Amino acid sequence: MHLAVIVLAAGKGTRMKSELPKVLHRACGRSLLDWALATAEPLNANETVVVVGHGAGDVVASLPEGAVAAVQEPQLGTGDAARVGFGACGRDVDTVLIILGDMPLLRPATLEAVLRTHKSEQAAVTLLTAVFQDPTGYGRVVREDGRVVGIVEERDADEGQRAISEMNVSVYAFDAAILGDALGRLRSDNDQGEYYLTDVVEILANDGRRIASVVADEADCVGVNSHAELALVSKVLRGRINEQLMQAGVAMLDPDRVYIDSGVEVGAGARILPDVYLQGDTTIEDGAEVGPSVHATDSSIARRAIVRYSVLDGATVGSGVTVGPYTYLRPGADLGVESKAGSFVEIKKSRVGPRSKVPHLSYIGDTTIGEDSNIGAATITANYDGFEKNRTEIGDRVKIGSDTILVAPVSVGDDAYTGAGSVISEDVPPGALALERSHQ
Ligand code: UD1
Ligand code: CA
Image 1 (cartoon, rainbow, N blue to C red):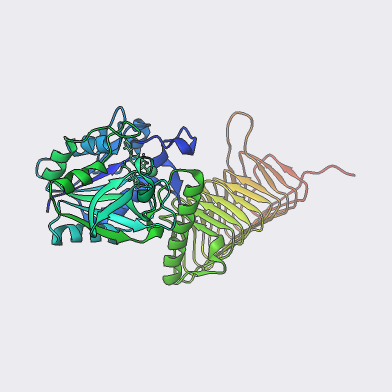
Image 2 (image 1 turned 120 degrees about the horizontal axis):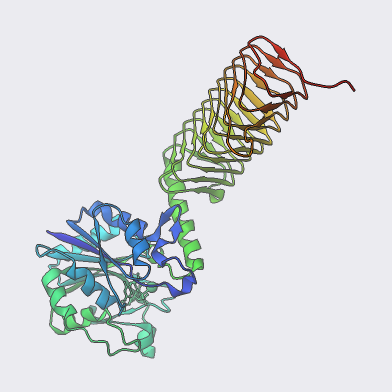
């Protein structure tokens, strides 16, 4: 088999009421189109063609390596889109699988079943259908004596056809040559004046070709046309991600309140509490406890770390570290083994060495702190002079007194102290006590 997968993704998605092309809206950190491509990935197709149109530039820019774009302009319907996509396929292609870019819940196994049936039944086309509780708005599968004879769109259907609950999912496997011929015979004499891919099915039925079908689960066939549907599929995808993680040994107190994006890694034995958002390139190691109420993006949390009520963005949290409550770790915050960042502490572009502590009410920016140092409450590194960011260097076993302001660039040597309330603007040598304070 020489297989081409064609993804139809040129439509505008009017009901999203958004500048963003519909297929670029995201669910669990991934665009709808990305989910569709991921579903087809295990098929190892020889070619993957994405039909783009509305917002083509952005959609093309989002494509993974190996996917080819075919531009459909203007967008004259799904049949026209299939024609454009088919035109971009190589001559060797003998089987074409058409899927939609806005149906992220479909599973690889379902696509595999369609191809398997297509082959075993030696069909001209194999459709995926589903029996919907409420099929309003979808194309209905019309059968005679059990055999598929056509698909009728809701707006073109008569009352009897509207009562049919078997809907057309819009996933089809085609014999390539037969598809090419039928696409050339499509006409746009329907309610919308569009070329309907669905009409190919009737054409083939009239030609006396073999039409096979596979019935999918209703729940897997939800398409996204509105924000309500986007929220619905996001919830389902989230449930699948959490289910998989729990099976792999991750503990969750209440999985309905855990929001983990696709691609985030969570180690077995990690414990995730409610209202946790893990996004982007984030990794949680074994035995870490995250939550309640943590929002982490592009961050790593190592073994046995505890992070509560905090926001992490591009942060590295070492093993055994405690973070929170109410800590803001910004890009480049790097907390060494068993260190601590406590309440109302903001840290950016700074290394906190092993076992060092920043327990309360501090801003630490562009700073290096050595090992076993303690940063007193309300310490501020004044890193910005209005023109440039300057560095603060704090050594090992340092005690910074409460309410110290470290005016960067400045350094505090190993084993040094600063007195509470001091504004430190000159370097402090190792072992010294630096005090800057007027008499009361
Ligand atoms: C289509 C099917 C319908 C099926 C439903 C399932 C047709 C005529 N109808 O209806 O039987 O039940 O899907 O969701 O095929 N697209 C293009 N170019 C175009 C038009 C559409 O690429 O010119 C793409 C869209 O981006 C979208 C997909 O094709 O991903 C489906 O188009 P849409 O207009 O949503 O078709 P439906 O009316 O939902
Ligand atoms: Ca649709």
